[in-house]
Image (cartoon, rainbow, N blue to C red; front, side):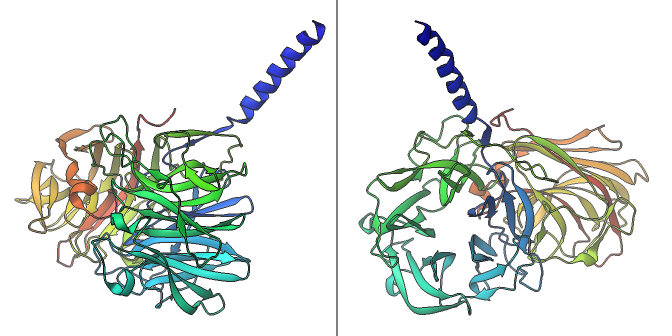
Length: 559
């Protein structure tokens, strides 16, 4: 009896310790909310590095660092010099597709596709924070979504490519191909090999086999790739072989991740999951990062394709993503400690942030297609961002005076404090919510009938112009103005104010689906941004922005 009394509290104490050890942090999805698609990841020691697609936004290919897979800090952008490349003349959803990141013997490698200029390329750095090299284009590797695999002293580049002999058997018929790679010259060696033709079962006409990665575990080479296209039919599939060149045999329980079979009317859905990469977690187990979306209705979403994480279990020596749940969870408990980073900007969960324009832009801000510092300044006016009104407009494919940051929440808002006086009706400055060249809402200050007005425009995909939705006259000589745009899932509302926090509603709950991927098309998400233009004319006029606020509050996040 005495032994039993001693044993029970000891067992309970051990269980409590075990329970505490298993719940030291919460991995909160998405780990990169907003337009951060096509994630790829690598681990170096105790450090994790992750990259995502940026298309024509500049700087391109953000590089995130973490020590716990929860707290992510952007430490660089791999494409940050116009001398590396620019995307002038390209539509928003072109540019850079699907980067991958690898580390081998002191060197970091990023592979990616510049879809309209040069194709697949490699850049390198000894430090992931840069500087990164100029791109080396791999002309022989024709296709998209390249990644590297290192097998002892040998290196390989694999990628999505054309069907055999470039003769598709059906729409979306693609292959995964591979070359050996000389790391000294970054040139291919020998012959190209087709590793996968079509997908898991070509008799079922699988489409868009892409984003391939190879991993070596025990005595097998595992080839993992996305299949089904980056929408509601998206999935992740896996093959394996005893030889790096194949033949690769598909897992008989493929796909290892998909949501295409789930009820689209389910509460708070995560959909379109796929395009995954695997990494070892701090606990020694395997985890997957992958893209997904959070639609507010059906397949409508404005926040773009985002980065999620889920655990992986090896079942009969096959990796299965999210094995304990029917759908990807908004939160997973992990058994290691959180490690926040110094000067880490808020990126996940609910947050509010104000950017004071003192001497630089933080790395959450993006330009269109290239970086040209001649049209903005932090020195011209103290503690302010001064923006010149350019003739370029947001409807064109150049470098307008636009500086944006991602909409990361379904429920969100952005606001600015602005000092600006328009001289002509073509001169405009204000705040925009932007998806592409014809799908946007623009809240701005201008003049009409020689009177200062606040105006609201909507991009017109038919005329490739913008239509005036609403305007209101402002008091005479009102230089200071506050502008605010808020999103509530499928609607946007627009305010202006003569004093801070004294908002007047200009237009309420306009159609937000117009900015959704389902309507606007492409691969990006919406951005809130500063935008000033003289609409085709030269102008010496400038707008002064004093701060930029962003607030996001989605109920799916744990408090």
